[in-house]
Image (cartoon, rainbow, N blue to C red; front, side):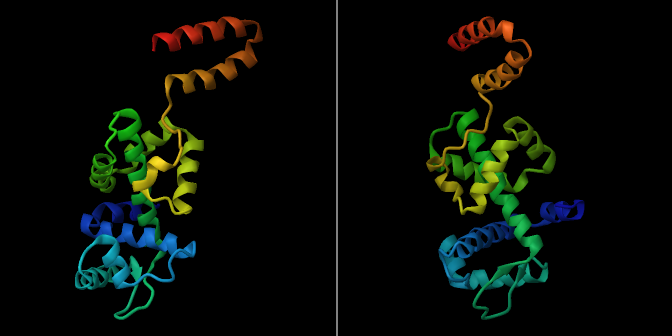
Length: 200
């Protein structure tokens, strides 16, 4: 996202973001053939709210050029900017859910996703970039692929994505480079690695 688009994301009220996220999730389902179209009723059902509330918000989102919509539209679509923001919100949710579960050790999925839902709207790029550096490019690509395949963040526990670097993963990645450079020290390195992991 460009600087102006990032600023647009920051300036968008959280209530707007909730709708954009919902429409994005439904858009992925539509593109995968799981639903035929996105209507007011589909959004209302997904968010468990009244359809009249949806109509009011769609007007606001349309004025901000985040969706393509007219009254009685049979299919609601995100604009390119709206789609980028929706994908970013879902990505933020997944990253925070993984962090809460894998790093903080929270096991209750309801608590994880409630917290992730609150945090996803406030994760500015410097913070997310720090998470990306920790997780590594491959893990980030895996997450982005899963999102494009229709991953529901609330069902993240059903998907095996190892992203946060455990001490063992760090040692494995470092060990490959070390052993390639110093093959004579392979046995010594593996022994020290085993001793470290036992202590950890």
